[in-house]
Image 1 (cartoon, rainbow, N blue to C red):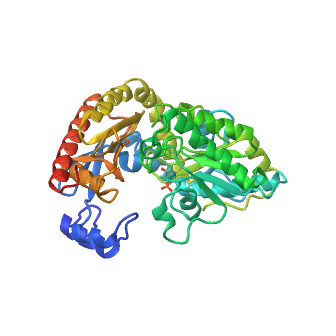
Image 2: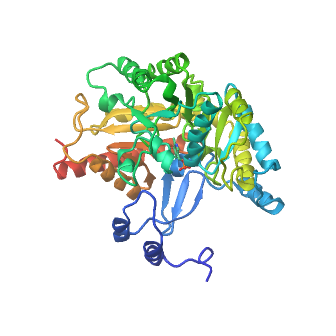
Image 3: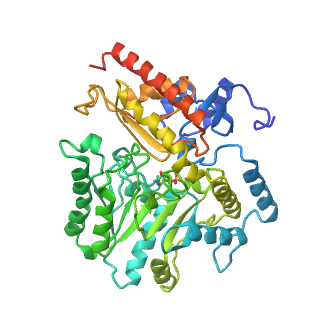
Amino acid sequence: MNMLTNHPPTEALQAIDSAHHMHPFTNGAALAEIGPRIIKSARGVWLTDTNGNRILDAMAGLWCVNVGYGRDSIAEAAARQMRELPYYNTFFQTSHVPAIALAQKLAEIAPGNLNHVFYALGGSDANDTNVRLVRHYWAAMGKPTKTAIISRKNAYHGSTMAGASLGGMSGMHAQGGLPIPGIHHINQPDWWSEGGEMSPKDFGIARARELEAKIAELGEDNVAAFIAEPIQGAGGVIIPPESYWPEIQAICDAHEILLIADEVICGFGRTGKMFGSQSYDIRPDIMTVAKGLSSGYAAIGASIVSDDVAQVVAEAGEFNHGYTYSGHPVSCAVALENLRILEEEKLVENVAEVTGPYLAEKWQALADHPLIGEATIRGFMASVAMTPDKSARAPFEAPKGTVGLIARGHAFANGLVMRHVGDRMIVAPPLVLTKSDVDLMIERAVKVFDLSLAQIKDEGIYR
Ligand SMILES: *Cc1c(COP(=O)(O)O)cnc(C)c1O
């Protein structure tokens, strides 16, 4: 029996899954108890599971399915490329048409002087590339001591050794001997949780100045780069105060360090501009891209590198780095078709001018709900902070994430994929979400918050 065309019923699949499949970011024993929800197919913004339930995917998979599910033209582009040239490498002085065409396209749409593409398979390994690239760059510039990389607590930059080290997730650092040497973390611009009595504006500036203090502490001669997401995604959609990025940019300009914008989530329209850097007037030396680059239809990531950095690296001899599947032809063909759709259907403009403002109005109104403290949104990434006391911005009297997990459960049960990060609930829907989809999503979200509030009152968590 071919399981792909004729699969056993859900319970049997769940048993096989728990017998043989190790899941990322999952408690395996706990999952074996309940069994995973198994997604069978998807169209537009809708998932269908093996029990026939339809679920509105307000997370676009893992923040990646920007053009929505079920795009035949992408499937055709992949099939065509598989027949023409399923694989060839880009090592050893060879290239191929899809890698060339996509590099040209990325250079065209990337801001400023970001005109050079080094391919990876996703965001994590693109960030590994960045670590080696910036150190190699400074060595080539005659400054081999500039190796330290400054990042932020609660940032997410992937799951490889370097990616997870750059990230500031304490749970990840607790396993596997991380962070690797040479990575330093400053505090995040999360005003809701950490801003205390300060105004958002003053707090944004104070948090940005931690970068300057860290550069001084390490010594400018020892610092290679600062890396940050324009808006932290996996950290809980932490939208920084407007004062934050201008101050960070000024500090980077005043010091001899490279700025890496991790655009893996923000890129390709999510913030209402093609790149998050454009939403915040950030001028990065390198951008990390993945996720929305292919809308998740194939595995691909990249570092998009400035003229200056690329030229120094090109003249520095061989860069001893690369992946077997760097610039995979099928992934590049998929990405090109995805970008064509993004542009032709004006999805980014739509987020900026039509559905984004509509969603923003409805999303911000969630702050009136008794469970919700703040409701923040930029483009098509949004979050709410749940709290028992809005004015004090207080946490619950339960371990962090307890209420988030309860709310996520109600969301799943009510046909809505929302994610929880601690006690924040987040959404990042496909960019094709329509106004009527927005209405349905908000209606379901309100129901989720009503049910969650009732449950935590029952359980004595809400006081
Ligand atoms: C998802 C993500 C990554 C990691 O990308 P993978 O494709 O999972 O390796 C890196 N940076 C950010 C900002 C991300 O959201």
